[in-house]
Image 1 (tube, rainbow, N blue to C red):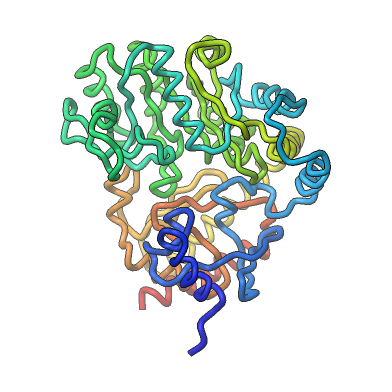
Image 2 (cartoon, rainbow, N blue to C red):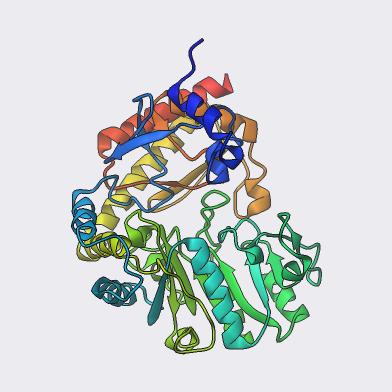
Amino acid sequence: MNISTSQALFEKAQNFIPGGVNSPVRAFRAVGGSPVFIKSAKGPYVYDEDDNEYIELINSWGPMILGHGHELIQKAVSDAIQHSFSFGAPTRREVEIAELITSMVPSIEKVRMVNSGTEATMSAIRVARGFTGRDKIIKFEGCYHGHGDSFLIAAGSGAVTFGTPDSPGVTKGVANDTLTAPYNDLDAVQKLVDANKGQIAALILEPVVGNMGCVLPAEGFLEGLRRICDEEGIVFIFDEVMTGFRLSKGGAQERFGIKPDLTTLGKIIGGGMPVGAYGGKAEIMNWVSPLGPVYQAGTLSGNPIAMAAGLTMLSYLNEHPEVYSQLELSGHKLVNGFKNSMKKLGLDYTINSIGSMYTLFFTDQQVTDFPSAKSSNLPLFGKYFHAMLDRGIYMGPSQFESMFLSTALEDSHIERIIQANEDSLKEVIG
């Protein structure tokens, strides 16, 4: 039996790259089989090394709002490359994109460019600690903020129990400074704050979670966190690496009307190029070096190619509000189609969605936090994933991921996704 080019590449990659991939979820461990190696992408499609075409529902985990290879962004990158690839010095576009970000995101008064979402969250935590003079942070089960040591912490058993390292290489000392609460549980947060009075520097969360699947904040949850942080002098941080500029021009904070103290951004602000940023209140951001004592630096921060792509992307989103109405409509059509198919098949699985983000959970429980997300039938999801892939639909290879739509999806694509979903469900449930 002949193996595919993707399979051959994966076998070769495992000799030189840990697990054969440069980011764990790409290895398909959660769904079985060998990963698809992507060769190119355009609009709503990606193409693998065997020239198979797939309708794309990952969109590079969010940033390809306009679809792949958008002409304006391609031109911006092509033009910027003519002037070299990196300077390690200030450029005009850094100023222009910073000005644009502060005009679009309600809470950001000053912003610092970095190279990834992980770098943004690590830096935001450091600034919060420097600003408050405190050491501890609160994070939430199921929220992923990159692979910084402070974030790879499993939950403790109670309000006064510190977390434990969730990965070898993370020290117990780091874990002692990280407190973990269930998402959507205000009482648990209050207990953590009461048990660690005057010691908590920051509270960080995804305002809409994308990393345990799409999970929305319960009514009053974000408002309650804002109140607690105000009362206790805790820096309130929104990780909008996924939701920033996707759920609205101003991200989740604009959509929900809640202003955090700091915001972390990524993905979209580079138009798909490696980039991140953190920003917020000027009084906090003024603690960042060289203005303040909190050190953070990077040779490639504000890279001119990434800035050209990001400035073009954000300018387009800022000038074309119809992007968001189109994304809302596409999300509404797709989710309604999925629900109609499940009703026809007599299935009671859960779909969480907001705008252009959605997850189909293989559980009949309402999914509001990590334990309820984990009630999903993971082997069944794996079968469903491969059934969709066989029908030309490229999804995230994990039950615990949100899918992301783009404006490149037309009605015909959405209808095809809905039909593939129905046929795949029929197949996997027998």
